Length: 203
Image 1: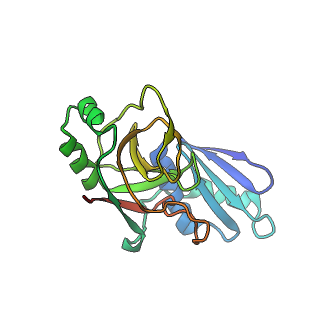
Image 2: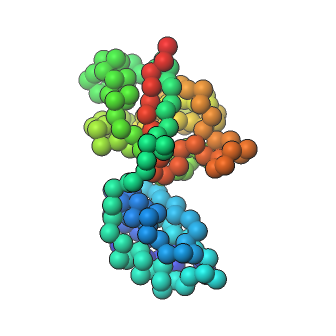
């Protein structure tokens, strides 16, 4: 663990891997001192934002360095169901790359226990991981200039849903009509770090 100051109101925690990030994020979400106003996980870092009028940097650093990583304690109310039509343009290619049939890819995706590890790329985009998803899916050799909003995609060990039309190089396996980012909703992002996700196949 490496602790780096990030301006006057932030502490950037560098860690070895995503498992350490999610464990520390879950621990601090439960035990962070008063005055910590936000926790922003990424693939190998966790940004801890705090209000210096309520807590000093030394206290935050001590809380971070002594926190014991834990499993997420989200409740069933934090499970988001996403109905998916598995008709993505890359589904057959993904199946061939993995040595599976398209039906086997769909079954594995639906049965995996997904959760949001961190957000990024675009507002509302969540990087989803699942301990029961064993596949490493290569990105497309050439990115698309416009991926449709609601596209359900795979890349590496991650799954994700495009919250709006944008360029992208992930493999598209399906699509959903669920709104991932809505500025009239509080919070705007449906998929936030720690939230669990269940994909449901629909016709």
